[in-house]
Image 1 (cartoon, helix red, strand yellow):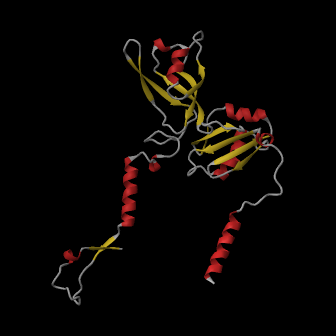
Image 2 (image 1 turned 90 degrees about the vertical axis):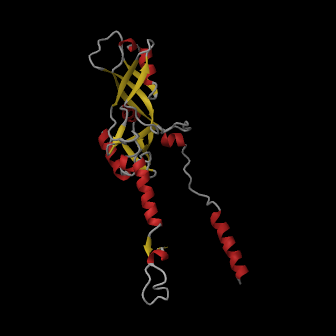
Length: 263
């Protein structure tokens, strides 16, 4: 009886593990289906509600009836556009946020590279640049420490009426944002250049990353200590044992001798 039952269970398991062959497989190519679409992911999905974002972003882009969003998971999404012009307009605008937290978006590609959906384009304002560095090559070298430089909004032949220079970089979202960086000049002097990031709203004020806020920051020692305290209190709840008068050991052992018993 038991042998027959074991045999049936094994056969049933093997049958369930077999892949089911679909009869109605779409015959259109992935390029035709996804060629005019944007892939993306939310950087802080615990705060950013995906279902609301799918409906809200087309309104913000003014493409409500011209694109449709598809929720792939609580973190990943796709927007399919009717027009390549609208798609390009959205991407050229630079970094986008939802619920004040950043999102990563790139045009769909058939063979995504290794860094796909891991960078966002950010315009950076660089302040306190030394006069000797007011050259395109020097500015690009400075900005290169933030990410891959794609644009330098600087023309040495035109007037400079702002106290900052703008550069556009592809920023790796796994890294922290730098507020400043020291650079050693050829004369041996050190200049501290400050950075401000356009269209970036919320970030962690401890580690400066875009993927969480400070109360959930894994790099904050205070959070690690609190987490350890909670786990410890959960695992090692104890109570002291008292000896009652009707216990044979009453008067022989004290309560301190008995110690603790885990709950």
